Amino acid sequence: MLPAAECLAVVADRAEDQCFKCFHKSYRKNVVISLPEFCIKLKLLVSEEILVEQLKRGEEAAFKQVVDSYQNMVYNTCLSIVKSEEDAEDLAQEVFVQVYQSIGSFKGESKLSTWLYRIATTKSLDHERKKKRKKRFGFVKSIFGDDAQVEVNPPDFNHPGVVLDKKENAAILMKAVDKLPENQKIAFILNKMEGLSYQEISEIMQTTVSAIESLLHRAKNNLRKILET
Image 1 (spheres, rainbow, N blue to C red):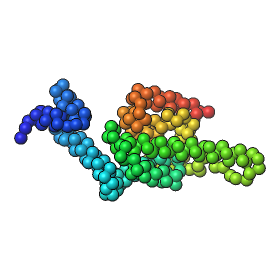
Image 2 (cartoon, rainbow, N blue to C red):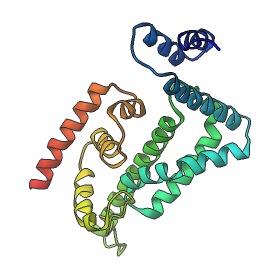
Image 3 (cartoon, one colour):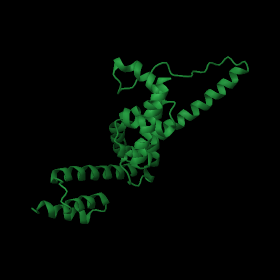
Image 4 (tube, helix red, strand yellow):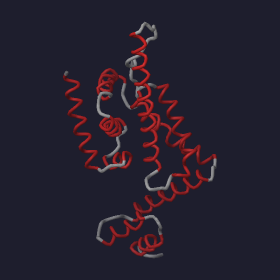
């Protein structure tokens, strides 16, 4: 059996993915990386690569695995943005339909989960824009005598990540979040509702970590002003 250092070198030299080579460089710079930790990360990366290849071949079992693994994540992300269980379920289905149809364009430059988050947030934001346009149209119609009722705000907000005794406060907070600029809103939801790190959010929103820090700082300040008025 080869020593750990030689194993890392062999894998890093043979691997096409740059992240494997980074492990090797870190080892040479005396950064402590245990072999079990490396093997776990390597296994996850290889497993995802295999899964993506199976998806591209149209294997039904692979698609089912993706849905089973990520359906809650996708649904919760959509729900945090649209605040309607019915709409979130429809959007989640649309997300997986797009995954199935567009997997051929996935280049593996980010994690599969990052790509899914990006699709979920994009579809949810598109849904909100369309809903606002319909509300404005409904409001104009009502001015000219149309009896159609326009629902300005959903009556309640039920998110799996919010415990029962905090539902009322969550509803108030999410109405305030709705008033934030779009980028601040998404960064806040992904960080506070989905628990993602700044790095993960930066990959999803395709920007820098420092930009995410700035967005979250401005979001918190704006929310404080909104809630105090």
